[in-house]
Structure formats: C-alpha cells, structure tokens
Length: 252
Ligand SMILES: NC(=O)c1ccc[n+]([C@@H]2O[C@H](COP(=O)([O-])OP(=O)(O)OC[C@H]3O[C@@H](n4cnc5c(N)ncnc54)[C@H](O)[C@@H]3O)[C@@H](O)[C@H]2O)c1
Image (cartoon, rainbow, N blue to C red):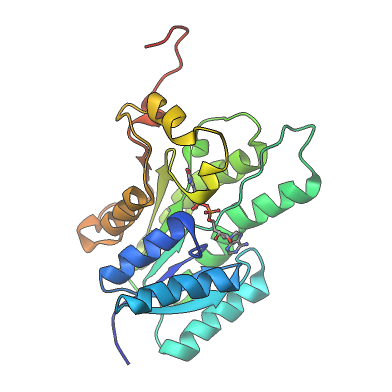
C-alpha cells in the first residue's frame, strides 16, 4: 500500500471540489473523495485513478454526526493512518428572500455549509498530528451581504469565525486552519444561475475574467504546502479583486 499523505475533500463529486481533488492527487496526495452523491464521488475517484493517482470514494452527508464518524472509521480501516489535510468544500446554495425561504431549506444550508464543516473538523482534529491543516471553502458572503442568500450568507459568515476559532484552539497542536473565499467561479452550477454568468461577473471583477476551479485548487495547494507553515486563521480571497471593490454611485 502507498504511504502518500491523505487528504479528505468534501463535496468533491463535481465543480470546485472535483478540481481540488484532482489537483491534490496530481501533487501526490491520496485523496478521499467525499460527496452526498455516491455516483459523483465514484466518478471523481475513477478520474483520479485513471490518471495514475490514488483515491477512495466515500459518500455521506457531512451534516450528520454518525455518518461523519463512520466515514473517518472507514478511512482508518482502509489506510490505517489519519488524514493530514481536510478541505471543507461541500456546499449548497438556495436563492430566496426571507419571505420565500422555507425553514427546511434554511436548515439544509446551515447543516451542509456550516455544521458539516464543524463536524468534519471535530472528527479530523481528534487524531490529526502536528503539521496537518484544514482549509474551509468560504465565499464573498463570509464578509459581504448578498441579496436572496440569507441562509448561505449566515453559514459563510459562520465559516469565517469557525476558521479563526478553530485556528486558535488547534494551533497549539500544530494544526493550521485557513479559509479560501472564491469570487465568481465558472462551474456547471453557476452557469445555470444566470443567462450570461461568466461575462456579467467578469465585468465586475478587476482582473476582468471569471475565476476557474483551477484558481481555487491552486490556492488550496499553496495553503496546504509546508511553506505556508506559519499561516493560520486567515481567509484568502481568490476572486480577481472582486471583493476589494467598494460600492460607488457611478460606474467606474
Ligand atoms: N462556484 C462559485 O462561484 C463559488 C463561489 C464562492 C464559493 N463557492 C463555494 O465553493 C464550494 C463548492 O461550490 P461549487 O460551485 O463547486 O458547487 P457544486 O454544487 O458544483 O458542488 C458542491 C458539491 O457538494 C456536494 N454536497 C452537497 N451537500 C452535501 C453534503 N451534505 N455532504 C457532502 N457533499 C454534499 C454536492 O453533491 C456537490 O457535488 C461551496 O462551498 C461553495 O459555497 C463557490
């Protein structure tokens, strides 16, 4: 059995998570590919293995504690060692005002986008050794309020403080915790959001283009590297400058 370091990527059955998983595998990590969708997780794992990488598909809901404990047990059974990198990427997004948003959708978003990060972090921290790290995938909503995203913004705002609080508590154990806040990123999901998602966000982005899943994966590789060994508790915007833009009453 290979002895390359183990990374867990949640929500890696598609979009940004799949790109993070394949980029880590290409950088010699063995990747545990989690997703709620078992078939999608298996596809990512097969894609990695077809490219001579190492991967294991692990389906399960990150918002459910017994499931999370079971997934860590399965990793230990298969590899007999603990993961040294956790990328909390899984997320869901609704699009509804306070009046429209159902309590069920609120709960699903908070469970996946915030509670899931906490549960995965809690279980990872139980056994993680010094030198391990956690990367949470946040959003511009970590710090800015966007319309019709109240549940998503509440969860991502929570991730901002979950990152800092867990960095504070886990720092003495040598575990770093950081967050990446992607700007507008081209994925299947975002392409379905508006008619011209890519161009409309490129126009607002100082670097004048939409972001790619590779942009986010590159930032994960940077933060996971031991060269980032003194960086913890930070959120890095991977947004082409989008969230540095102040609102202004005239076009600029
Ligand atoms: N795409 C963007 O423009 C953008 C911008 C900012 C932040 N983000 C964040 O990046 C992350 C990935 O976004 P994406 O655009 O790739 O989304 P996506 O919908 O393409 O992928 C999310 C994945 O998470 C999985 N998932 C959902 N609920 C889960 C659960 N309970 N347990 C395990 N897996 C679950 C889904 O099945 C899906 O495969 C999210 O956290 C999102 O908030 C994305």
